[in-house]
Image (cartoon, rainbow, N blue to C red):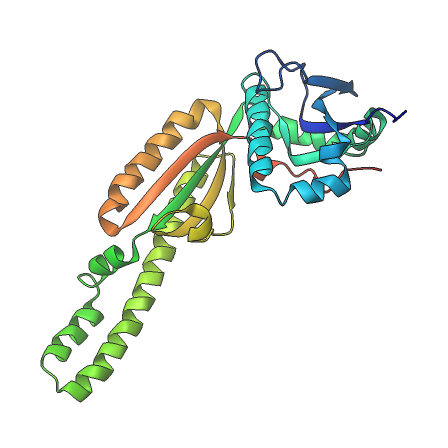
Length: 272
């Protein structure tokens, strides 16, 4: 007779008040919490056949499997966030049993307290800026005197000289565009940072990830007091209008689980 398959514990997030689990995500009947040292860990039971270290490595290669479960993961955390401040954990943070989970909570107790104190009544919002480079070039060429001067020289020069002038123009254009992008990105970040409790600049994502035609030129996250969110969004809308004719598009999304503002080490927690 085969032994019953062992359950593992899947951790979504930790909060300091009893979470409301009813109606959260698609795991409403499976979700529960583990209370320890004044903290509540929102968890569910999962099968070794899917989430043991060996099987998880195999399943992570299945994009459909990952997509479905990441969606549930985010739904659960966002559902808990509606009534509680949370420290979110990355997808597939697994423990072999409740004792191991509690040991992790012991180890990071002060980190949890600090994070939850900093996150109180705050939300994470993301602001990404995308740039239509060709459209920005159209703006730059009319505002840079050095480029305008070379443009006139090209029109009145021999073909040989014009060739070298065009090369020079391309260099100046590239420098001017990069300078503008840096200036606009810095201006945006500093403006939104003033309206935030904390701010982060993340790495730029390629088009293969963003699925946008334009290049990402700023990828930032902001921890905003809930009573200042409307002011924050209004500032984004104002800047969006100002930047529109320059070929820049601002994309503001949220609220998100505050992954960018939790300093807790969330490395691999799985135990044998």
